[in-house]
Image 1 (cartoon, rainbow, N blue to C red):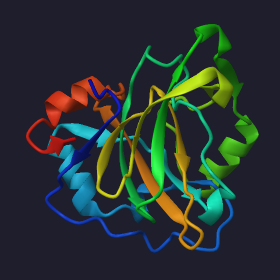
Image 2: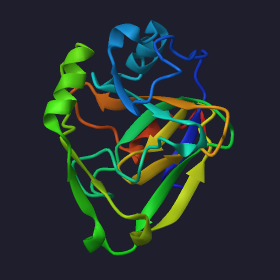
Image 3: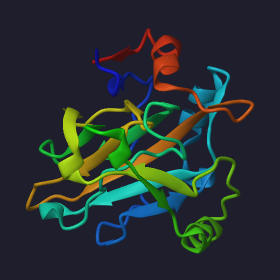
Length: 205
């Protein structure tokens, strides 16, 4: 069973944000809700859900000079809380999001983020965090095996509790992703499994 990804139909087209700077060499930035289209915010609210204040943009450069390495987006090990994100990606069809399965759980590496760097980015974007993002888990590629991969060329639900990464082999096009954590109104993460039930009428493989 595919526990990693679903495309989702939205009642509108979300355009690539103007705030994306094509020449940027920073692989992650934070985006304030004031830059998010109201139509999207109203849509998620119609399900009695919301997006976390922490909205991220990810950049994967042409020829894979900059990429998003293997990681999960949670402070707990893969499989403990398989939270869902809604992602939009603009870039070449050859770019992929890849999910990985650890061969031996003892090989998982807990990664503590630079809190000062995170706080600086959040402060710059005028964001008050409402979820924990001080650490995650990673692994060496030699200790994982590829579980699933998909081109994210449409709005997508992603299981970010599992290890994943991005890959962009295109020599001419950069890849941009806008990423939203889906929360319940009490700030609890919606899991990928729960999202399949919530959005079962408009999500598909």
